[in-house]
Structures are given as C-alpha cells and as structure tokens.
Image 1 (cartoon, rainbow, N blue to C red):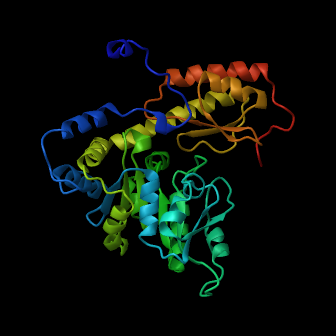
Image 2: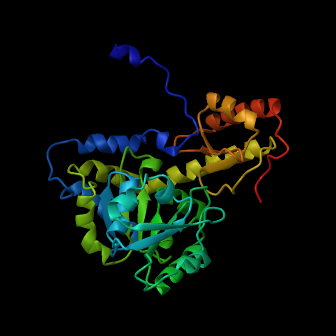
Image 3: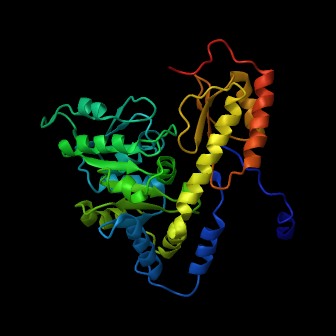
Amino acid sequence: MLAESFDRPPARRHFASDNNAGIHPLVLAAIAAANDGHVAGYGDDPYTQRAEAAFRALLGAQARVFFTFNGTGANVVALAAAMRPYEAVICPAGAHLNVDECGAFERFAGAKLIDVAVEDGKLTPQHVEAALTGLGDPHHVQPAAISISQATEVGTVYTLGELRSLGEAAHRHGLLFHVDGARLANAAAALGVELRTLLVESGIDVATFGGTKNGLAFGEAIVLPRPHALCEALPFVRKQGAQLASKMRFIAAQFEALLHQDLWLQNAQHANAMAQLLASRTAALGVPLAYPVQSNAVFAILPREAIEPLQRERWFYEWDAKRCIVRWMTAFDTTEDDVHAFADAVAKVVRTTPPLPEQRAPA
C-alpha cells in the first residue's frame, strides 16, 4: 500500500495560500542534517546559536531573536510581553491579529484590540492619533502599542517613509511599534532593501519574521532590531504561551538554511515575480484588480458566476463575497507553467461569464 502511494502524481499547485506550499529542499535537508545525535534542548544548542548569529549578521550585533512554532504564537507572545490587561493595541480592522487568530491575543494577553478602518490595508499616523482617546481616564482602555502587517493583508507594502512616520507617531505617544512579518521577506523583496534597513532603520520595536510562508515546515522568529525592555519578559512569556520548543534545533536549523546566502530573499523574489506574472496575464483578459500587486498576492474581481468553476480548477479563497474579490497567492515553488495554466483557466471562465454591471473595481 505504501509503495503504491509513491506512484501517485504530485499534488497540483494551487493559489489559495503560500502556507500550502511544501518545504524548500535546502530547508528539508537542514532538518534531516539536524536529526543527528543528541544536543541540549530549549535552544541551548549549536543550531540555535548559529541561527541567532545569522540574524545578527543581517541586523547588527544588537539584535535579539526568539524562535516560536507559528505566526499567531509569535504575534501574541511579542505583544503580550509588552502589555497589561487594561491596555490596547491599535491595528487595521483587517489585521491578521484581529481577524484570523480566533481572539488569541485577547484571551492570552487579556488586553484589547482597537481596530480601525483603513485603505489598502495600511495604518497611518492619522489613524493612530484618532485612536488615542481616553488617555489617563480609568474608564477607558489605554493604548500601548500599534501593530501592522508587512506586507499587509491585501498584499500592499508599506514604504520606508510610511514605516518611519508610523514609528515616529508611535514613539511620540510612548507606544510600542509591532510588525506582523509573516510576509516580511516579500515586503523586503518588493522594496529592494536590506532587512537591516527595513527593520532597524524604520523605528520598529519588535517584528515577527515569517518562515512558514517562505519555505519552512514550521517556525517563526520574534525579532527585536535593537535592545528593548521586552527582552527581559519574552523568554518567560514565550514559555507561558506554549511557544518554547524543547527540540529547538529543528526550528533553528530551518532558519539557518533560510538565511544562508539569502535564500529567504530569493524565495520571496520568486513568489513576488509569479504574482506579477499572474496579474499581468489576467489583466490582459480584462480582469480588474482590487488592490495594487506589490508582494505575492493578487486580489482580483471576477464575475460572480466564474468564481466557483474556477475554484474547481485550482483552489483559492473568495476574499470579499459582496464585491466578488478573490485572493490568489503565489509561493516560492510556484512555476511559470502553474501561472500560465491558471491564467488560461481564468480566460475560459471569464469568456463564458461576462461581468455583471455592478462588478467593478472599488474606488
């Protein structure tokens, strides 16, 4: 029975999520290489030490890194280490922290999220200023941090100028500046900047550096670009938050491979390029975009009748059913052939289901 399974054709790549991609071969090899002999647990091992050193080589000797199992855990632990239960985090309404983490932050930190409506997924200093109400009033929750996603949940990317302006606004009011970097590599690739520039020179206090969406089997990193009081609390909050891996070497070995010779950047650049190709192919078919394509996400507007037939061809998510917006994600292993085959499928359903009059790109 097992031998028969090896004869099955490989699973078709689709465009639902970069989480659905496999493990990069170099990362998989690193996991296998780490599976040799015994080393100390909980991060007191040479693999973790080398992975931490690799991050410092990119960010500077002052940087600190704490590895976790997943992105939700990394976000929650990083923010909870800085928060008291009567405090709050200002974030975009569509933030992963607010929408896709099942209230994990509220339950674990006991604090509140102040979610604000934004355009193109981006929080601005004006949003932050407007949310700073009830300061010093014991009847009101007290804002203590801002949190953004880079790249955003709709695939857009904050410029360095936008990040610096947010950092200045946050620090002017004594707020922590947190970045959910599940796709931080894609943002760096899109901006064409070094990771040090993106994190250290932008005013960010703490960020997550995503691995799972960029070729790892599992694992994220909480990164502090410069010394911060969080460093004292994070080891304890990480343990309380069930994010301290006993066999840390298997997370660290993956990051060591990902950071070696900028594999993280190559993976992200490729995924971004495939998104641009997909956007170009479908735009030629007259398919409008809901948001600019700046990372590895394409948000397209399809005729309502076309969505389900196309999902049967290659699976993807319907992002906004009311506006017929769908999300197509590319990954490190998406090929040009994958993109062209999918675009050809789009062409077939778009030709057979003309858009309804009310279906147009949002203003």
